[in-house]
Image (cartoon, rainbow, N blue to C red; front, side, top):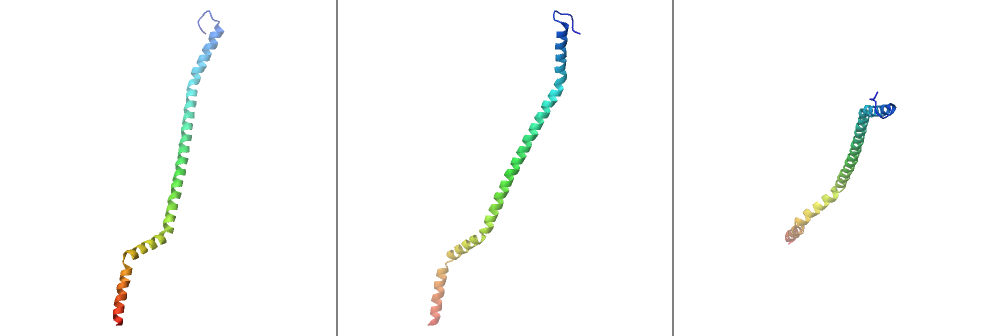
Length: 107
């Protein structure tokens, strides 16, 4: 019981019990807040993991697409390289020289 004061003892008891209740519930409220924060952080962690997986999937698709494009362009690249070699080798000059030599044998 509270000390005798000008306030009714039932009021002081109610206030005291209310204060004790708040103090008694404080650890539980703190743990509840801690668990909510941890749950929220874990949720964000999983959201970031899903986002990273989606980005990796997109990069994988782009890499596969680039690889397929390179595979399909091998023949075209080989033709282009062959044409370049032929054009730089002076085939026309070689054919002209060969014709001259062959014509010299006909005489």
